[in-house]
Image (cartoon, rainbow, N blue to C red; front, side):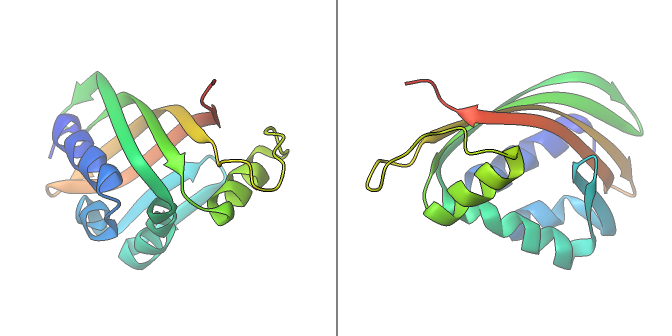
Length: 141
């Protein structure tokens, strides 16, 4: 596996909201650092974390490879999705530390924009460690 293959699989797993495809990218004890302070290790934790993408609709992922080597690579990624549940909106608002979107009861849920960088390390044909750094915000209306 190289960074291009990884990013193709990452894009497909996210757009199809499929935790099995996501886990298949990683070694059995692979690590996914979704923030500098949180890590999911192994397929069970990876699958549990990826469940949150099921609360997203109309997911669109784009990426650009920034660097590649036999042992890994770096990519810039950009994602938009429609928030599909109040639960996901609360998860996002809590992760930002504030409720940046003033919403009244009954207001539509926002479409979100995420932009980030991903560094992946590979061994034995799968990802052994992936770290992402990202920011999110509601899509401007």
